[in-house]
Length: 207
Image 1 (tube, one colour):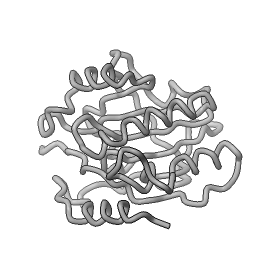
Image 2 (tube, rainbow, N blue to C red; image 1 turned 90 degrees about the vertical axis):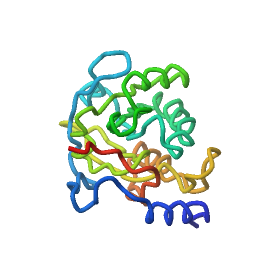
Image 3 (cartoon, rainbow, N blue to C red; image 1 turned 30 degrees about the vertical axis):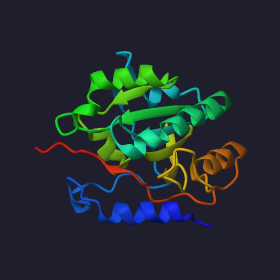
Image 4 (cartoon, helix red, strand yellow; image 1 turned 180 degrees about the vertical axis):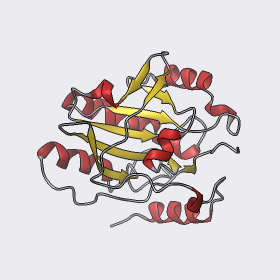
């Protein structure tokens, strides 16, 4: 059963004001599509892309940021997901898609500070042009795309929220993402492949 907190968050999302109408944005990927590749700069200065993870079983791709209250509440859960699944071959890859001219707290320099403060053991990369967020169809922070290693590249297996509680850092009852990763590793069908991402709207470039 979907929790009351998840429904409240969904209603809040419906009434939030985005800096760009969804009709102006490309649709992005769907479950079953090949995941678009990219190479973006990590907080350590290195270039990171899906090619970096070619020896894994999959990737938990999370569009997130520094400033968003929802993203902040999910940070420890994202760290826990990496700790749980990286050893099983499905690490986290975090991407900040926000324009720092609109949201100064999401600058590359402040990304480096946050990664050090939180002790991120996974890459935290900067989508400076926002092309990667647009190619995936990311809309919120956080917005998750679970990718599965294929013969060539990766395929999209799940899109949406981490769980059903965006308002409490303790987590939710319906762990959509963990359920999807577990089924993917078991080679079993994923029961819920899409959910509504709850979070702050991505801060798109104004030009």
